[in-house]
Length: 407
Image: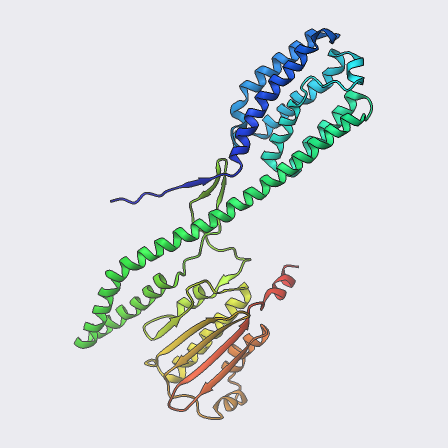
């Protein structure tokens, strides 16, 4: 049966758009009702009627525009705010001076707040501040002076719009966080499913080829060795979770979209497990935590390079048949990587002699790298019992230097 991709859309702000749609209709009716009750006091009632006719047609025709963020374009917002500001400026021409001086409402009345709220939901608190400031300025022009009731209403609209805009921004950030969490969960379930399927089929076949090749010998032994290397590499991949976890949740008009997996940000922390996985093979075993082992990029690469240098020493001095084991430990403040082999070990005094002869593999490639990161390397070797190299790096390594390089 073909598997289908399921796309989930989440939008915390969508209910706000629906509420704004209802608000615009109700405030339009409210503004018309105010005009009807004071119709006889207008000096130019025909001008108010014309404006309200335009307001009704505009409000009802643009209801789909305030259905979601995608439909609510910048051009619409500008036009909508223009309708509101025009109504405010027309108020002194249509209404009597006595009513205006007494604190009478403008032609659009509280319908104007709907335009400001659309700015807030669409663009956050900054857009809301811009729209509120324009409305405040035009209201002061219409009144001719900063009356107390006018200032009170303007401050109320300004604060409410900023608050809603800020809440919308927080809601969008929460959507992205939730989407990433769902992506991690979905990726984990898919990895577990693949691991079960591969373990029941491919890995068993590779293991059988390796065993049979070793028994038959000759060219079959070489084929078995290659099958063993592929088995180890594949087992590491499906069990270690080395695929980068998605950091992207697309921003769509209808909300956050949980869909794709992308490469990790180059400036963000790296998973050390992914860098060490390349060293795993038929004769190199990798044991790691189940969760990502995160380090700053420079520290992760330097630590992985030190592990590679230690493995090079194993191949060079212990022979091609020596086995090695890599153990990764994620401590609260440090990352510890241990590289152990079953080679003949290092004779006492050999490292000092090599350093004196100018061969600085351990001194520079291993200890030097970690010293620059604030870490260290401990080497323990017993003749005939192999060698163990313990590499330690603090989790904060590389951050200060990375900031300095960006400057």
